[in-house]
Amino acid sequence: MPTLLRASRQYPVVSVTGPRQSGKTTLLRHTFPRHAYVSLEAPDAREFAFTDPRGFLAQFGGPVILDEAQHVPDLFSYIQLIVDEHPEPGRFMLSGSHNFLLIRRIAQSLAGRVHISHLLPFSPAELHGLPLRTADDIADPAPDPLPDTWTELAATGGYPPIHDRRLDPSEWLSLYFQTYLERDVRALSQVGDLEAFRRFVVLCAGRAGQLLNLSALGADCGVSHETARRWLSVLEASFIVFRLPPHHENFNKRLTKSPKLYFLDTGLLCYLLRVHTAGELATHAMRGAVFENFVITELRKSYHHAGREPRLSFWRDHRGNEVDLVVDLPRGAVPVEIKSGATIASDFFKGLGHWEKLAESFGGGILVYGGDDSHVRSVAAVRSWRHWP
Image (spheres, rainbow, N blue to C red):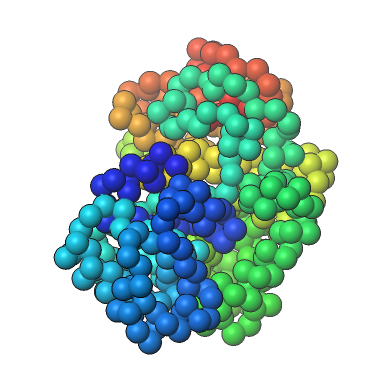
């Protein structure tokens, strides 16, 4: 909310994007209760905006929230004309679930006039009413530890309806995924075979935390490399997955150039892996990958919800030496190892040891693990997942 309020005092247009059901409409209407509101998913409102965009916008005598604005792309040009003539801050609030479509229209018509924010599903800190932190704070453990277990939080995910209405996560996520296939996928791309696309998403879930190989992914799904590339872009545009890029510091070594693949909500990831409870996750073969996804996604959320662009990557050389996460801070790159085990073993620090040997400067790494105790060792700061980020 503070990010939106600040943006509304500086820009004539504020855009909030994020996955469907992440709470965009609720946030905007709660933050700006005096704004008029219209959803462009309503057929009558959409037809009015299509056939008479000037008249549609003229009906609002003051600030307005336009929900799912990407449905009427011509509106963006008319909004541009209005804000160029009357550039008072906070005139238009736009929301949308299709990042690609919305951002493309903004780039074409509203560049320099709009502030763009991303709203992702709840973080554990938000769910428990704890203060939100950013990457700048990761050097020190969070003062208020998270309750529950990480397996409970990861298996449930952060979509607001699950928590607001105390719904069964597996049942809700099943309906959510089916709605996503039938509505969003068809709107974003000409996907003729939805069953093949479904298999593709499930295969992506099985590769969470791994290097992305589009050729192998496409071959396993029975589609071409180009189709796999296009479908992955659809998943990114609709806030299902994201790619974590490799760190570009060469250390005089050949480095991996492929990104790694992660999901923006671990609840959806677990559903796709057919993991329905915390108990099932605790013994699942992909427990470590889900924990890694959980830790990285929570830090990414902290960036977005503070209105900042994530500066995250991973490091891996041609010998397979790897650091799971590299956080680019003003004081330098901070390497982070992520291990789901609750008992610390010496090999947990192996990747950080390689980084320390190769880096010209080493300001101290961080180990995030599945246990409860946070302390400092000579090689790294040990951080419980309860005190992260």
